[in-house]
Image 1 (cartoon, one colour):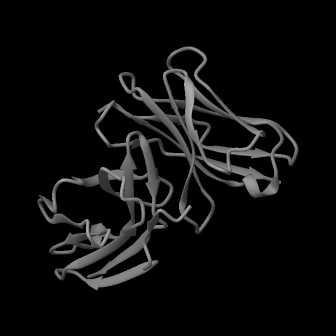
Image 2 (tube, one colour; image 1 turned 135 degrees about the vertical axis):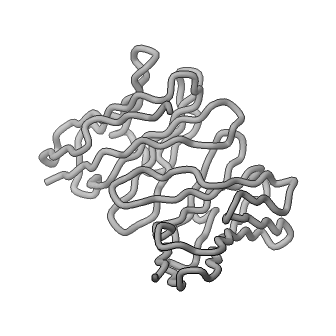
Image 3 (cartoon, chains in turn blue, green; image 1 turned 45 degrees about the vertical axis):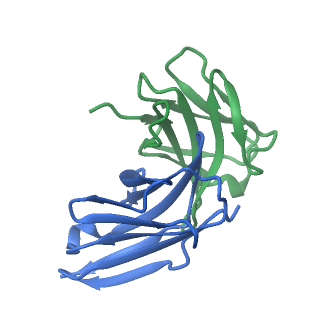
Length: 110
Length: 113
């Protein structure tokens, strides 16, 4: 099942800089896209989402961009903080069916 | 804040044994899910459950797997005869209708020896 792809397994950025996490999808029927954050030994927690009818959603330091023509979305974190270090999962939903990407491990260095 | 609760947090079993993983979803949620994550790999969808029946299942969810919501609060995943490759972290999740947001439990780490 490769409907949602995160091609970068890891990303390292300096504290204060921008982190950009990318995600691609193949199913044009997805109507909602989400980002989840996961710390070790914990379940994923919801971070931010975007409807397929929008191209941008912002919540504090977190912004999600959606490019439907390219079937691509990205999560921007600015400024990045050491506490942002975690695995970030992109997810996409159609009706109540939610699929996840493989995750990108973000490391924010002080 | 309401949360999804999973028990046990760790389960060790012998190959071929049956295991039941338990979950208590958030009380007003209508959609329920099981996912698993093998160490170092992606979070994989197993099954979704709505209105007391399976809505969708993945190819992983074969005849050895079953789900049940026996009493209106618990949501269980049963693996009838465990295999070594079933060793993984199993996450239960629930969603309120239409929200698009899954709420996950902390997971059950299943180790099959």
